Amino acid sequence: MKRKTDILVGFIVLLVVAATIVAVAWVKQADIGKRQRDVVARFRDVGNARVGNAVVVRGVVGGRVQAIELAPDGWVIVHLRVNPSVIFPADPVVLLNESSLFGEWQATVIERSALPHDDVVRREIAEAGRDGRMLPGATLPGIGKLTAVAGQIAGDVASVAERVEVAFDEQAARELRASIKNVSDLSSVMSKVVRTHAADLDVLSGQLQTAVASLNETANTVKLTATRIDSATTSPEARSIVSDLAIASTELRHTSSQIRELSGRFASTQTKLDAAITNGDSVLAKINAGTGSLGLLVNDPTMYRQTDSLLTELRALVTDFKANPKKYVSVRIF
Amino acid sequence: MATATSIDRPPASRGARVPLDAIAAAVGAIGSLTLRGLADLGTTTRFVADTGLAIARDVSTWLPETVEQMWRLGIASMPIALFIASFTGIVLALLASYSFTGAVPLYFVGTLVQKTVTLELAPVLTGLALAGRVGANIAAELGTMRVTEQIDALETLGYDPLPYLVVPRVLAGGVMFPIVVAASMIVGVGAGWIASVLLLHLSTPEFTKGLRLFFNTFDVEYGLVKSASFGVAVTLIGCARGLRTDGGAVGVGRAATSAVVYSAVLILVLDAFWAVTWLLGHGDAV
Image (cartoon, rainbow over all chains, first blue to last red; front, side, top):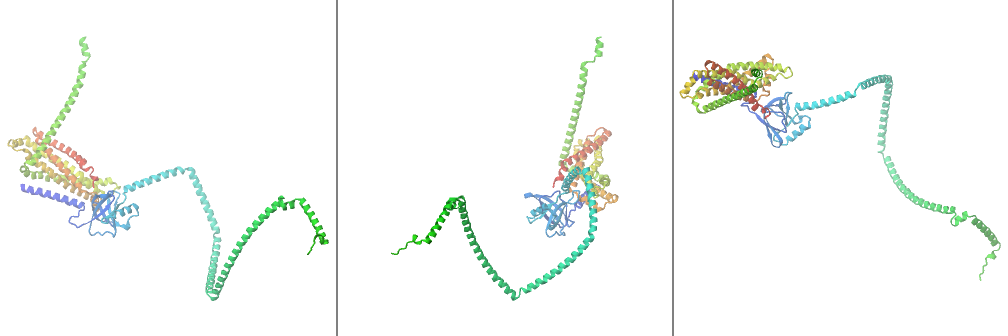
């Protein structure tokens, strides 16, 4: 009886212990005796990720987070245990993110090119990938953080709405209604105008089409003419004309340089003439002022009279000289 | 006239003496209570220390008895424990479904059932049930032995009653309570699973998803260690109350009752103790 009790107690104890171990292993999805592949990724921060979180590849759970440990230089090393049959993308990166609204996290393995357009995430991935031995990882913001940002945005929107409410009082509403009515009236008027001028526009558009056709025709003609000119310029006569033109152009350049030289001389002469005129002006000014001999001659009547008298006497002297030359000239040779 | 005066006017010293007597009585009561508490504490501590010494000293005495006690305290208690656990699991699943009211996905029923059963309900409810069954049983048995002077006879013959009567029971309680609680955990979660599938129309993969969602091996470790401490406490109290029994059948009944009450209180105190010392802050650890 005693031995039977011992065996029974031992059996039940072992049974319960085994059942407990099996149950825990089953709930934890432990892979006892199954070959697994260990992958290491490094992160700056792992958020709320915990040991046992799922490793997801293309939406399928392919493993579990095996361990999380702090590493030097501010890194966090995450060991992922994945099924050997799971094939990672060509250039894999690991993102830690929330998988539901209820605090579940997962490690998602994706290709680098499929990263979200988030500069922070891309920078973290680039930094974590410098090691080369471990998969680069980054943590996406949790729903809590996003909710906080959304809350802030909602607060800003509420603030704006409050301001709009303050600005948009009864008066503003009335004015807005009146404006809308005006716009409505205006649009109906414009509609009428458009309807009225639609026929004219049709005619105009027909004419425009005709004009465009004419233009096309003209363009074709011009094109044809250009083709002909092009063919004409390639003949020997044209070459001769061009050569003559070149010679004429050379001569023109020569003539023009001579004209430039002449014009330079003319400019010099003009300068001298200006100086002479200036001197003349000065002399005339003196004459007008009555200074100098000429001034006195021109302005002083006494001088005039004396000169006139002198001329009269000279005339009488000449007359006398003509009449009696011997009186004044005595030529003796010996 | 003088007599009348003395009758009309009460003596001045009497009014002052009454409050002094009351204060003295109150202080005396506090002192008595403190002394009794300290005496109980000393007795209990000495009893626990003697039991510990007996475990180390008389292995050949307690070892053959321990398996028998494991059967009586553990295996024989299994049906009632599993019965409680199964109904607890069912009720928990229904309560969770009722509380979620569509705001929380229904697969969280599995999470709630797993967490609640492994961390709290399986250890505590099983502990309380076994405190009633095992604690009362031990106190009544040892109390009867005490009042029928069987223990006195052992002591007269030079046998120490502790290795023979107390140590096997305490060890059996410490070993078998976790076994019973582990079985209760499995049955409780299984009952919750069945109830979810049958009554809540939750699929098995959904329940399993919730079950695994936040499962941690620590949950089971915590529940089992806690239940081991309950087992030791319940058997120690039962033994202590039984060995201190006096007054015949009435004393035996009183010992059994006080063993159950003290065990239940100590289970709740230990539950809080483990929660504060071990559970608190564990969630933040990596």
